[in-house]
Length: 113
Image (tube, rainbow, N blue to C red):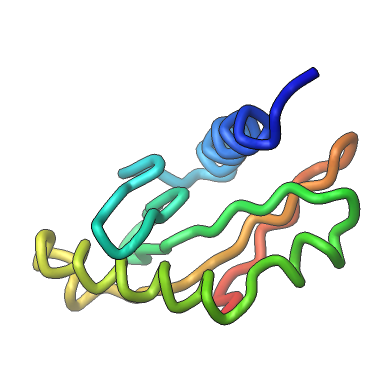
């Protein structure tokens, strides 16, 4: 039996593969800061997205799991990322979600918040 942590890591790996197949370039996976972690940082063209990946039993539960604390953590970590990578400051920025349910294709929600 897999632990929740192992399932989450596997979901993030699958999410990265899925987004690559959609034409995105994955710049970072599990980018960690003292403020928190960003699951994926991706780009396509001049669009840079910070992605929160959620695997749950239902799509509704996955969306509900992206609560204000998660959004704040990702937003704060994204600010640090942009400080370290000023080349992206004039790009289109987005906070996306990748909602995953076992046995179904992921749903990529652009501009989730």
